[in-house]
Image (cartoon, rainbow, N blue to C red; front, side):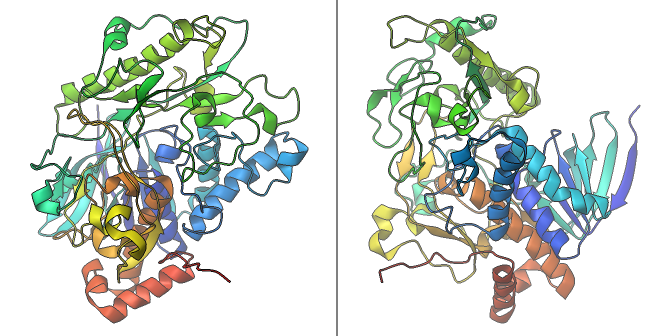
Amino acid sequence: MSSETATTTDILVVGGGLGGVAAALAALRRGREVVLTEETDWIGGQLTSQGVPPDEHAWIEQFGSTRSYRELRENIRAYYRTWYPLADWARVDRTLNPGQGKVSRLCHEPRVGAAVLEAMVGPWIAAGRLRVLYRHRPVAASVDGDRVTAVVLEGPDGDRLEVGAPYVLDATELGDLLPLTGTEHVTGFESRHDTGEPSAPDEAQPDNMQAFSWVFAVDHRAGEDHTIDRPAGYAAWRAYQPPKWPNPLISLSGPDPRTLETFERAFLPNGDTGPVVADQSKDPGDRELWAFRRIVARSVFRPGFAESDVTVVNWPMIDYLPGPLIGVSDEERAKHLAGARELSMSMLYWLQTEAPRPDGGTGWPGLRLRGDVMGTTDGLAKAPYIRESRRIVARRRVVEQDLSLAVRGSAGAVQYPDSVGVGMYRIDLHPSTGGDTYIDVASSPFQIPLGALLPVRLRNLLPAGKNIGTTHITNGCYRLHPVEWNVGEVAGALAAHCLAGGLEPGQVHENGARLAAFQDELTADGVELAWPEVKGY
C-alpha cells in the first residue's frame, strides 16, 4: 500500500540531469537547502543516464562555459588520471580525451561521469544541505494563483512525497512540471508567421518534434560471437524508410546533415585513427562511425590494458521517428519507448549480421554490448536521449534570426543586455516525428538571455534545462551539454539570489541595478556573460 508524506526545502529541483545538478550546486554554494529529484539511479542526464558524451564547441578548453562546468570536465579527467593505467603521453596530456572520440574533446564513459557528479554533490549530502531522491518522478503539483506551492513526487514503491518550496525548478528532460503547474508552454514547431524564422514552417506543428534515441555502447572481440537474438520487429525496422530519406534507415547510408546529400559512412571496429583532435567547426566527425563517439580508446592506456575500444552508438540510424513522447497517452508513450529500444537493438543486430565489411564479408559478430559502462544489464542506456522538451512561453524568446550566421553575418549574434551565459553550436535539428529531415544552420557564438528563463506568468517556477524560451529551431543549438549546465546554474543562482534579497525573478529582470547586481554575482562565480572579441595583436 502506498503512502504520502510531506516535507519542505528552500529550493526544489525536479530532474537530476546536467541542468538540475548545476542548479542544485549553485544554490548550495549560496547557502541554501535543496531537494533534487531524479527518475533514474544516476544524476547527470544526457551525460550519464542517456549515455551521450558531451557535444561542445571548438573553444571549450579556453572559454565559452561556466567555471563550474570546466571543473566538471577537469574532475572527469582527474578520475582517469587517478584510477586508470594511462599511457605516458596521455597522463601528461592537459586536454586528455579518454575515448579519442571525434565528437568531443572529452569523450568518456557515462559511468565515470556519474561517479564524478556523485562526488561533486557528496559533500553537500554529508552536510545535510542536499537531499537527492532517486527513482522519483513528479506526478502532481499544487498552485496558488501564480505561484507553485508544492510538487508531489512518486517513488519506486508507489509512495508519494509532497515537497513544498519557495522556488521550484523544472530540470526534467521533457518539461514535465509545465503542464502539471499550468505554466504556459509550447511544443514542436512554431510557425514562421509567429517567429519570423527563415527555417520555420508556414503553420505551427506542435506535435512535430525532434527524434529521441536510445543509445548503447559496444566493443569488439575479434573471433568471438556475441550476436544478440534477432529482435521480434527486425524485419519491419530493416525495411523502414523514413519520409525524405534516400534509403532504409538501418544502413550506413544517409543524408549529410549539413548538405542533405546522400553519402556512405564507414564503420571499422578498432580501426587505427591516430591521434584525434575533435573540432566540429572543421569536421563533424561522423564519416567514420567507430571513432565518432568512441569513449574508451586502447591507445590512451598502457599496452594490454584494454583489448578493444568502446564506442557509443548514437547515430542517425537509431533516431526514433514514429512518434514523440510529449502530448500522447501513457499507452502511446510506452509504445514509442519500446519501439526506440527495438530499433536500437535492430541496428546492433544488423551490424553483427549484415553490415558490409571492408574485406567484402558481412557482419561483425564480435560486437559486444557494454551495458556495464552504461550501468545497465541489457546494454542500453538507462534512459532515452532527449533532444527536445516542452518550452516555456518566456519573457524573451530566442529566435533563429538572433544567431543565424546567414542572417547576422559579421555582426555576430544579438547581444542581450540581460545575458546570463554563453553557448555555441550549430542549429542542429535531427529528423522529426512530422517527417522532416535535418535542419542544419550555421550559427554565431550566442548569449543566454535571462528573459528566456522567466515564464510570462508563474513567479516562482524556473526552467533549468532544455525547457527555456527557445523555439523548435533555436533549441537545436541551446540543447547541448555546456548550455544546459549554464542554464541550470543560473536558475539555481537566481532562486537563491531572490531568497536572499526578498525579491522575485521578475523584479531582478525589470530593474537595471538589480539585474546588474545579479550579473556581477554570476561573473564572480565564474559565469561568462559574453564571448571574448579577439581581433589580433
